[in-house]
Length: 284
Image (cartoon, rainbow, N blue to C red):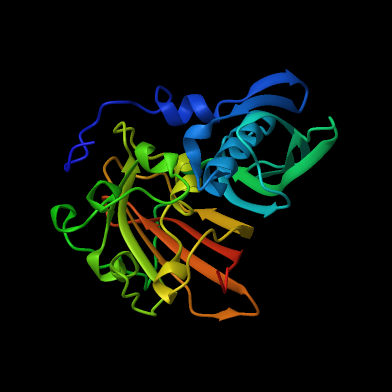
């Protein structure tokens, strides 16, 4: 993807759309083959998984846009076949609520629940234009002054297929961990998009909140930081162009940390927010 993030793929016709597409088997039941292209250190990315369940719920509910979606990650998902089962909890004029679970099978053929989600959907285009906020876009240097995975001296140990599918340009102020000198501030900021140039939509926002390197890296920790719970609020449909994502952690205690994320679009609008609880690896 060029520095200016020129458009190549379109919404509905991109690798992200193909890899999150679910096939309806019957009422409320969907099949999908989880792609290995969205893994890091062998684990399927939690934001990608949330987008998969989000697509299934969009089909099952009368409203198509996720407003709030909360997921509990029960066991680690693996690339390969999976089943999503949905249930309509309530439907209303402006909001519909549903739940969904993603299942896979172990080597003995036993069904294992990987993720359970509860979400409310509506119509983002029907929301009023009135905005009253004290929130401000993150101060990130211009794209050409930021650094991406392609600028790293070597590949991520254990593999990171997802970085080939993302446009990431990280704020140098949050890259101390990559140089062996983490800041200790628990902050991560980046320009964000999809590598094929596809513009953002509500479902790719579910990916964006969980696609940056963990803030734990800037706290001096290493390795995988698995998500326990992730809640995303989608506030409006994003404008075309690259997004800016800012994530922060203020408290690591008992081996767990929170990550608060904000996603801003090219029109300086706060388009998504999230909070997740994650487990931190405190020793090698």
